[in-house]
Amino acid sequence: MGVKMTGRLVGATGIELKHEDSGSVIRTSPPADNGGDGSSFSPTDLAAASLGACAATTLALYAQRNGIPLTGVSFEVEKLMHLNPRRLGRVVMRMKIDSPCSDEDFARLAEAGKGCPVKRSLAPEVEIDETYERG
Image (cartoon, rainbow, N blue to C red; front, side, top):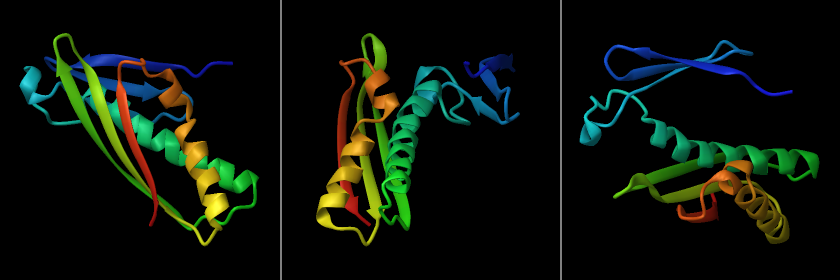
């Protein structure tokens, strides 16, 4: 069973996305350097942020399933674009993991995050520079 999402143009260039199962709504707009107003996440911003969210979710699920204590996860993501053709070029992600776990379990958590589905779905041309550290 798949997950259905819908989208529609709002204004001149904005997009409203709706997650049909939950009813959640996200709006996007093009960045100012591409003719938009930069008033919200751009679609490529969402792609980069999705990498961080997916890695954090994946490692949290791994911790839960394997009895590894996890008290918090936070991350920063920086998106860098290539201009010709315009596309994601590089994503720099810094993940902070708060856990009193052993070094061995910490390494397992980091490996779980590095194997997230979003990362495996990005084109191989997108450079991913990821760091996992204790928070």
